[in-house]
Length: 199
Image (cartoon, rainbow, N blue to C red; front, top):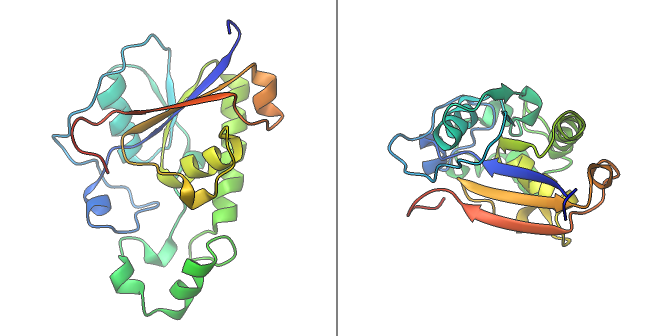
């Protein structure tokens, strides 16, 4: 399909907070050093992604010197006062229990709801589609799960998508217009960029 429109979504490499199973939505921590990844050498002019350090560092490791365009709208969901805390630290908090039962309606204190995250990510996604050809986006688990839920070739719930760190999702449509009309992609492939370890 000569005129196919392809979008690649990449989840950042893991951080120490990820390893410790903490909520690190807007917490700006670096990726763990020493993780080996594939180098994607395909020709491209730029990579777009979240403005948080872990995404910028992931792009640098995978794409070397390709220019990176940061976009804060592609950030993970903000967990507000629950940032850098774990399930065990929060499990007795009544509001946290409510949130676990309804991520879409309940909002973490000083954070944002899943709906808020989805709205800003979708707007950023459409802006990228309009402005770039065959874009590559480095972002977080929440935004990628949402985009796969909306645009994946099959219908699955948000949490049914497995999105490990260092994974790359290639979505293809017949043309750009189909993306902007909100149609599901026609083909889909997954590649794991981390060597050995998967998270």
